Length: 173
Image (cartoon, rainbow, N blue to C red; front, side, top):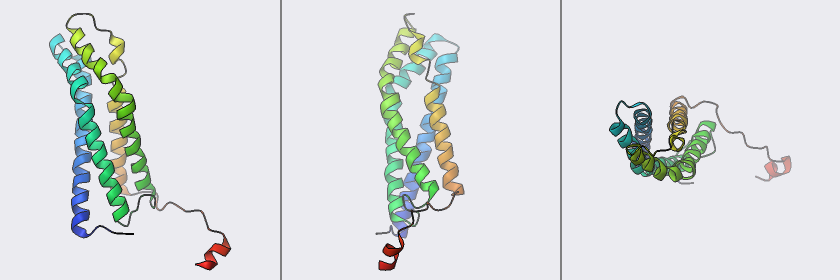
């Protein structure tokens, strides 16, 4: 198996950390827009918050998630940590894949409706059911990304245990 040299590992790690920071920042922005949209003091501000959510959230979030995934894969394959050698790496990989899939399958399809809701809010024809579940995406994502950050620092649980090979296979190697 190939290993990343020191310079490539550092560059990849920096890109990974910056992408993760961007992803967290985008999630915080989503949370702020959801709160402003729901509890804002004037209708125009609330409308703009929902329109911004509908127009701008999905692609920056997905790109930062995919960059985290790609750089995480590179770091896993090109360093001593591996992809499935340590539990903390495996859990981070699963969290990243699940969050990217949630962006595509759960968040993206509803965003045109959220933008439309923001526009209809000004006309008085908006259906609040369209935005009733918007608190969950940033809550779930920020929680998962906080867990991933803690795992990156603490590196808990040790190595993933592989199933023991039968005795005759061990003697052949």
